[in-house]
Image (tube, rainbow, N blue to C red; front, side):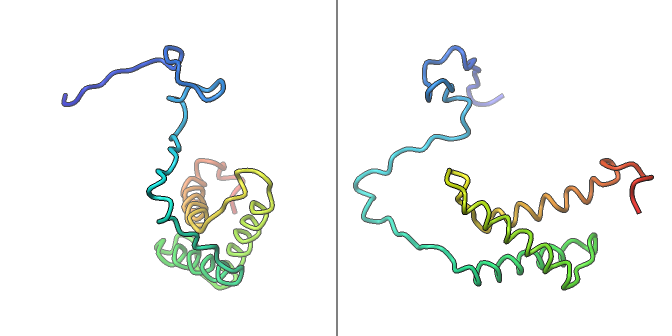
Length: 130
């Protein structure tokens, strides 16, 4: 093997955020150095109409590139786009860290949709499917 590997139990470390051992967190946020603060730029966010257009394009792209796994017609593209747009709108209205959404969430949702579609035969018995 190459490199140095070791394992430390989370109970053996004193680095904590409240009661949570830091090694159990996914990542740490480190404060931006003062010398970089002038370089920070707020690009704002997309308007609702532009976001809906991008969402529809992402949905259409995924449906068209999945080799016909799910038929790509305008009705289905519009329906999925509306559902994802509504989900984004709902999450934005929350008053916590979950209120931050992006078009990456639309990409993730489409990947999840196709995963569930591929797993359908394992998730539902044949007698329940049409």
